[in-house]
Length: 408
Image (cartoon, rainbow, N blue to C red; front, top):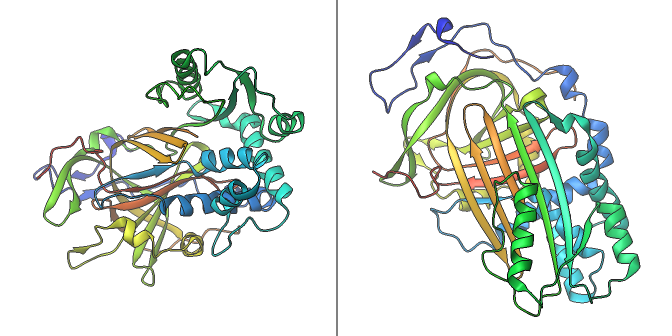
């Protein structure tokens, strides 16, 4: 549903920092229909091992982060999991054990089941999303690319080269690291910029060490309009509460939609799902409770208490509900560095939709009434490909302005 100027009944324009009073037409439409909800289970089962590994990566990577409470955390689990899978094909000994641990879930220390099944599913998932024509139409784009840059005189085992090409669709490209490090740096940065449509122009800020012989680069590019866009005329100034007695000024997008909504007293949070174009993907937002003004400002500490199973149960309990939503506009950047692996994520969320890049069933029930879901304190989100349930992007947002806002 698009709310245009002729269809509003009332908008409060008195206090720019208190915008909850807003009324919309009662005839709402929803993209969450039975046909869409029933379209995904078969694909989810087909790639279940891969999807679980992708979630495992997101959970494990948080453990490496030495961040303050005021720092955003962004990652593309799909991009990182795919890169790990590609490396795992040629890894041995302790390196293999560490990579398997990153892809494991729960208390497992290694990937469960047949290791080849993981590669078959993970590579198959990536190639499915690359080849699916539905991923490339007006208003929705989802693209993947992988390249293995290799010193020309380095001999790669033919079996490994065949495996990464066949299973993951990786390009193997010669690149002279030792003879011209700056040219190698520029070549990789240019390749990354092309694959991410210019959203990430520099994944390597400086030339690589002369001893470098190989670099694996993995990119995910996602751009989509909302299925039900926010009306820019309803976007207003607001305050986002970063910490006790510390706020930042933001632009709050507002709208009234029928959305999947859940409320869990056990977990102490609420959830809402915003569908993208044709409901191919959705952004899920988890907002901790605000009881009597006592906000959960430390979102990282809160999320460390939440299991993947809790998130799955929360989504399963969601029902279609009229929701008045207020969500800050965001332009986010984050760099994740673990040893010699570097990942970079850039994301923009606006009234029309989301643009992001990273380098590395049954019927629906309605409930009566409406809910106000105002995202004005630290929250957790993830963007999920709905047919396969694969997590494309995952983040904990403490400051929607990414440190560039006006603080009070």
